[in-house]
Length: 632
Image (tube, rainbow, N blue to C red; front, side, top):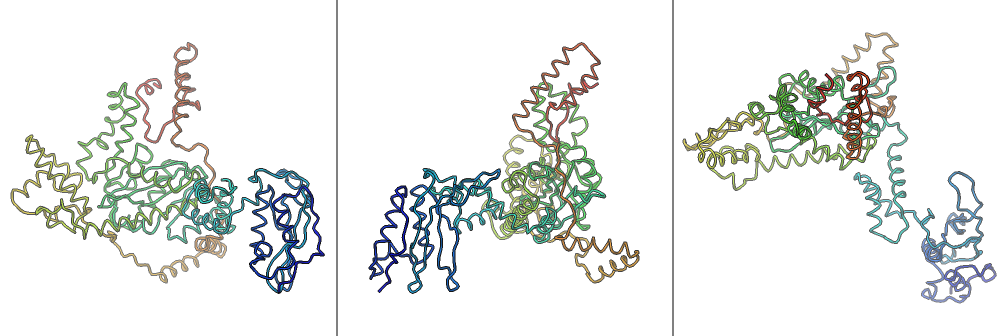
């Protein structure tokens, strides 16, 4: 027999109390004889959570929110819980405001000790405020459940934007009161917990070390403010040392909170897959900054073979540094960027092309010159542009640097897996259009991309050159290191297959073994002994300073480096609206200058050049002939 509900406890009931909850309380209070558990379902609850859930459902339906005011333990376990309206307590002053009205509503939930059930024993059923029709302004009802919190954490770990996380949760339960700001707050809290109270630079260096990155930083003398950061994943180093023949360089913008240009350096595998060599965050795009970055790229090769071809846009500082750091590499300009500039100057296209491109740079982008040197089919920096796009699928606009590093790790690991798969396919898989006696010595020993190029060249030999009696040109031989049409024709006449020695080694390398010239092994004991001897040769004060620097490298959580300064005037692609506004304003100013009869013409032009409304320019910008003449 179950004990009856204590009827001596009284409940103060007001006419303003919601009908659903009033009926619920009255029903509980009137049931005294409860013999069967089935009869008790609507009055007694098997747990406190079950009771709260039922009360919250009824309260929310009637236009108010129930929260826990306090609880009391009995026998070491929760025995009493006071529930109140979320507008209870006194009004709180402050900038944020307060919904508190001192609402007197409360309910007392009590645990029945013998039967471990819960019931409502006491309460005051009245409000001093109007009930709400919409509860979305009440933070309590917008709290996430444990399952929703776990989902947010998983999606945030996958670098999903809070906006998309909110949409995912909204689709699962459209009736919830969540707003997008709630998801943003949870994501910010998760990231703050991950940083563990570290400074931005400590968090960044900790992320780099824990995720197998090799990195270097450069600080401003005397301030320890970081101005440049260079880093690459160990997988990137392995791929760079295995395939150093092609290097493409370009910068992108709006990737980090410091507005610093983000440089991506990209390589190419024989299976036509791009991979990231290294990343760098720099304060300025100047010669000194590029020298610092490219010297570290070169040092990662450890005396391996250096690049044979480097592609950039027409950034004069970068072009000069490439010639200095890699003097033996062929340097090419991106034809796509040149085409975009030509289209902007289509009225005087011939004079513009000669004066600004053909006169000094024809050997770096015209096929007649570029195809006489090894470029392995690369004539644009589109591979880097595609890597920019890929990065921005992961990185939100102006993310923290440690978040950028986390995204980079996922990108590099994905690239490494995909490239490894293409190697195995080239070795093991046989394509139908490759089953020709001409290629029998090459199957499984060169990449599918090389075989596709050879097959296309053989078709050109049969369909084009033979039909029109034209010459070969040997473009495939000089630029890609593969037999061209005339050489393939010779193989066909002699009825013998193409020899593996006639294929450039670039297409024959189907593994990640580096082209090393020295041993990679490091004798840690010997190296530390050398360091110890050098330390002992310094005075005690210097020894202490040097030891602190060594410890800072090994323990990034104690680093004293300061984060970079937010850059104000970095070069970046302006929006279409900005382009139009600046173009219109520049045209207006030029028109006024032409009509003006005051002052020196050169002085007037200088004033226009310094205007904030000058036409925007990207790194490949070259002034038109008209603008050059106006300066003169």
